[in-house]
Length: 211
Image 1: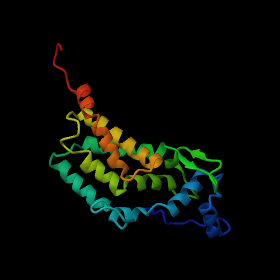
Image 2: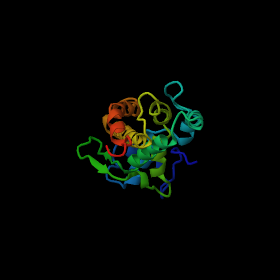
Image 3: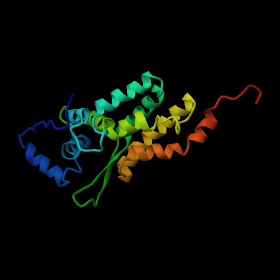
Image 4: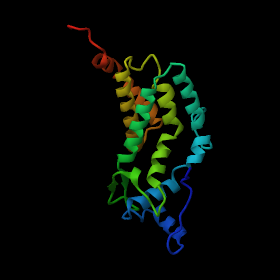
């Protein structure tokens, strides 16, 4: 699996200089792929580290592979519907792929928005898919998808309700993370959607014939 730490060389071998310019915000006018590459390099951990849990974080919320195994155990034994988890992760992935990133100069005097970051490439490197992978493999999002959203007390009862619930959780998780900078954004998203559970149950509950 590709890692966000792999740094392709520029044509003149001046990757270090180019990287320093990005650190200072001088690449604001560069193509979105170049800007996203430097975001991955400076701010986000490598995908391999996210998978095995070699990143700082809460206890039990850093090792992606362990969280997925535990979640699949719940699905296998019928404590969790796969539709909720799949919808949650798909919604989060699509939102991360589409939602614009705010990029500006060194003093942020001329901010710009870059749409569709999830499809960007930089010198042959799939920086967009890696960026989306960083969102999905963060332990908080997987923990929310498999364990918090699937809580039998607060989730909707119907399958259709759980699909809508997962859709809302996935979209809100990424939007809150990108634009509100709230710690534990996926957990906040689940709590917000929990308040809509009665509404989702009401609109998705099958009605008796003639009523």
